[in-house]
Image (cartoon, rainbow, N blue to C red):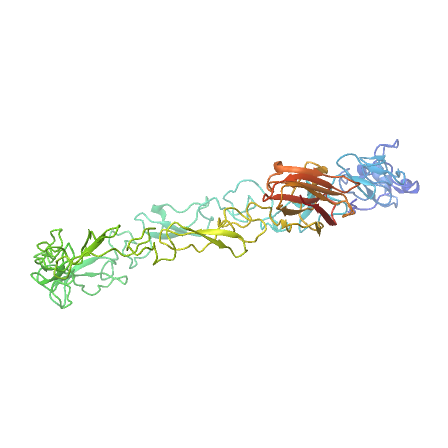
Length: 583
């Protein structure tokens, strides 16, 4: 409950009431309400004069509170002044909306026998005794159970930090008056300039001038913008139709000139309005040194009528001539030679000879796969030779062995064991090499390797599931501190911490799992064939014997099952031992 004291003076209005135990409530039969005194506007009346006989003034209370002799009280929730001043509730009752009751109505909270709305009460925001803090020029508020601040009149929060630091009385939309009307910390921001302040303007010829912002916050019009002095900038600043008048030249202009090598060049007026050096023109294909670099026709592909060696379109060594346009002509090919190259660019290699040098062709060597012969350095055929062994699962060289020069026979399968000891296989590749990986057809949930080489480890197994050793008769653990990963169709959906086990029987039949005698808390056991699907549940039991669980289900040798140790509700966890009866 909040109590604020803001004194305005002294009155005698409550002297008699104080002697009787407090000021009368607003609805008692005296017709007197302390708030009437506070709301009379401060003017003296005949009754006021009668009360000015030495008694203290009734203090002003915050909105929603009433002065009850010794302090401001909220008659809607104060258990000592419930409904009216001096009307206490029974010791075990609460005050709810001005009425004593055994408990608070729905949506209200019992905080020290006062029923408050935790969604709006800044002294009990969201829960009891959570008092919303005030800040500079801001009062605390509670909205939807969350503490906040509300700026007081005449202040605005601009920086987003707690408190309302900016003193301003919003007057509406911004006007041209030198005042921040809309309280956004900017003055006349919706206008072009601040009245009476210097402002840049554009003259009638487009140059940059400087004038004074008008009383209407407007920039001077071009014909009213004062003209600047002429500057060296390549423009007509003073609007006399001349560029950079008074300087040697107009910045940026160019003009022809005679270079040091007597060619025609060009010069440019610099940023200081003075002519720069005479720069030579670009070189032309004319037999002259145009750019004064002492080289004739520099920058072109070649010097007119020059010759040089070149590479023909077919890659042979030819010769070319530079034309009158200073560009190389077509590379002319030489005559054909016996060299394994198409010298004359007729698309035929070593044409005119028996064969092309280094070429090969099939022939009959007596082997089942044939043979080949090679064209010699004189462009004649050599003898027919059996082929070399190739990676093709065939005995190519007639030595009664297949792919013998390679690691393995193409397409063959080789047994292997991965790093986790899981039996797998490797297939000889098309290049007769074995892959680096050793892959099993399916994932083995009891290993920590990627058994089936799909880049995933135990992807078809429960995450973090513990494998049950083959033939084990029991497993033990503690579910406390474990996550709640699985639900079940029994035991209140088994909404508690749980541990999953992977069970891979070596024989088919029935398997039984039991916590009877192995746990002292309310357990739930359930089993699945797919850890990711609750729809694959095959067994579930809550209270088989007392609070203990027991499940039995049919199993097939080599298959994988998931047995989950669970509890009845979120508070059920603890140490356990599961007894296992294998098929």
